[in-house]
Image (cartoon, rainbow, N blue to C red; front, side, top):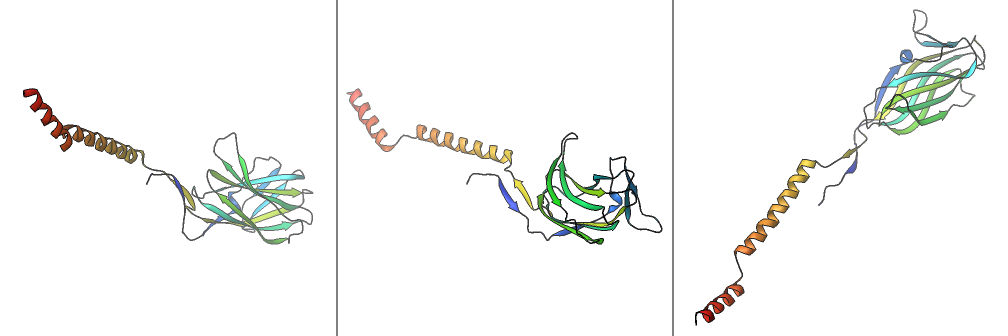
Length: 206
């Protein structure tokens, strides 16, 4: 049977990657990140300018080929109008391009203290980044983050390609067998050929 690439599903048990919001970073100079302190164990986000697109980012160290199934974010909203609006997963390899592969819009009427659960079905093929978008209506509000849970199945799907060296060896073996068989057929004529050759020799000798 010819070797072909095929997809194989892993039978491993789902795992949970436990992270902390202390890993959040941002490129927006209007966002202030207050890291854990004696009086607050979480990460506090405030802004110097209100806005609807205030993003923080967190790298997800999941192995390539893993299937991400759920993202959980523990939070606390200090303000009745500021909120968390989106949870995204972004895949990136080249530094100048990135692709959004999961985008979950969060309902406006979520509790002030809870855990957001975002179900997904994403296979990690490149570097994975978690992005959280917030809306701040004023500079007095604060959003605090705690634990980040990422549920995934490691090695969920991968491609098993044939070894090119083994393929080449098999091809060489087939060629050798064919040439060897062909040479044997030429070196050893059939009984019918021998019979007619014998008659031809007798007629020539007469």
